[in-house]
Image (cartoon, rainbow over all chains, first blue to last red; front, side, top):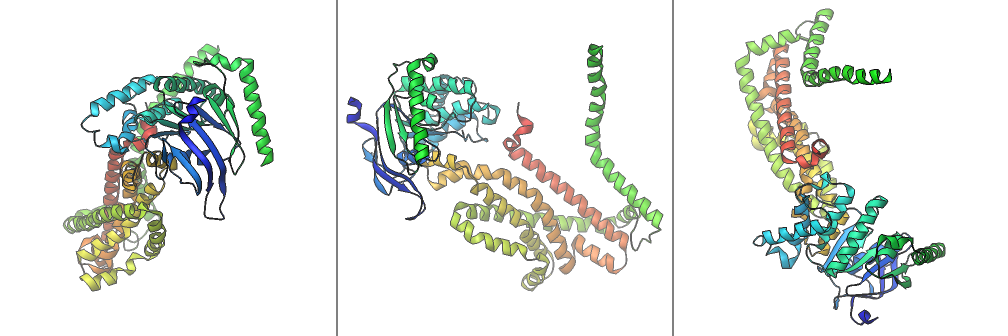
Length: 266
Length: 272
């Protein structure tokens, strides 16, 4: 495990409590390391603090106890090397898909002052991303003219446009039908392979986690902590067919058992 | 057999459908006409004297007879109303953005706004008269006071209901409050704002006419109150009719602006 020598994300003994000293303890004693370029998945029973984990890593919440280190720096404010995508694509309906994708560039400090002068260059980059996710030529459409799956593809483009080192995905495919979901798994798989970006995927879907991730973290019920860490052994590039192999099903089964136990313990 | 019935049903359905389309555009005019006819018949049937309820024919006659004062006073009312409304738009937008800016301001000012809105604006007219004398200024201010509340509430609501995910995505990128307001909050509240203009303009008419009735020498409100004191009931109704016409015209204008400015918010009618 050479990559663990210099992890991109390192969460050390973190406690996070909402709503004052007597509020809900969302995560407690959370420890987790994600290496650079790695694809990590976090699974667990509902309400286990997975979304809190997202907010801790991106710097939207600062923990009361322990430390979060991203790219070698203690997180004390939002970290702009992160791209985020949620289950709800949250495209802005008054902007075209292309303008939606360019939105992060209007915010991120190192791009916002360059954007106007280098517009063509950025637009080209956005169109290239659109092509990568299979949305070539849809940039001029408004998001509400796209289907749910297409909006989610555009959402991924928006999360990637500023070339983040870390991509945080919070159940991005939860609202999609089974076939569209599998298509998007492949899109994410190929993006990860091509761009070398580090990805943390929070999901309820154990098959999704097993198919995509290098490592799977199983969280306990609230207050959340990591119960177990699995290394996914299947070789890359993975084909969708891998999901019908025995080893794959055994792994999903094992994860399922662990989460069921964590739920009972709650 | 079934093939025949399948073929004939669309044909028989197609004709009434196209007829129905033109009925929809005609309907507002026909219903208005129907109302006048009913009104006329009611007056004839009950043998109403014109000093209690004049028939529409008598009202139209009054409009022709008093056209010059009606025209002048209509313009005056339109002027005070739109001026008050314009101030309300600027102030309402400003205060709405201010209130929607932070949860604390929202919590602090909202009860005050509700309390202020609960005050009948007619009760404020005497105070305005003490400050500014009778005439145009109290009418403009009453129109403003009564119409700015819905604008404030709508703009503030638009800002306060930004999806938390959108805010998270932008904040994680290092967006400041100002960035979020400019990129998301303000464009997002625009449909609410333009929607509220339709409500605000009709309220503005209520405000200006109330003030003109109580404290002015001009305007439709004043014209109607002096006509009433002379038992010239047809002229009172003529004034009401003019107000209705002005109200509908301004409402339609606001609705048109709304459609022009925020087409994306009416996407169901525009989608592919």
